[in-house]
Image: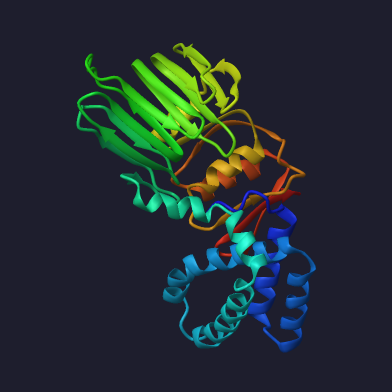
Length: 316
């Protein structure tokens, strides 16, 4: 599950530790201390809400595995939920929610094609084009007699286009439009830019401010509304995920952890102290625990699991 982008690693870890303490003890004194911590900083409330969302997603799995002590923990969880609802009614809570990824994910529910955490999907479109949707992505398809248009709301799509000389194949994102010129390419919609990788053929890019460039086979382009940020070599990693593989070629550890986090139902975070460590190799996307084991064996890092659904990578 992807955490809100503006929350610090420290706040998220503190929130997780508070969750553990309240689950283990849950005394009136501990709850008062927890409320004081939440009141210290608006970020603490947002971090706590995130921890609650992750825990609620895992609740059914936990309840299947635990029976004898479930009633006691359920009582404490209800107390915490009640406190959260009380906090959630404030303008502060609304502002915290608005700055998270939730509004965007809710907006993806109505998309023609959408994926959740840990899910990839492929589809054959009406014209014979093949698309693969990465985890946490949403895509709309709008084909008519004049054009074949895809709109990537968020996330990432890999496309192998079918030939149709009478109808151009277009992909729109928040930051511009791409037209395939007989091509296989991927489009990644980031928080502040669109990234295009061309693996076969060419793609014409028109940014929101009408800058136009043709991106050739083997090139990668990043652009915003204002224009192009960079033209570099295409990344094989932006195609490998469709085969269930995460490729790292001197990839910063923090970036790799963020990629793995898209494929886990819980939380996976990285301490900024180790986020810039370079990583080489290939890792299985369908077994992130094994990927973490490989990383821990190769790098000076430690993988902590304070909760079954909360994993943190930090220095040894």
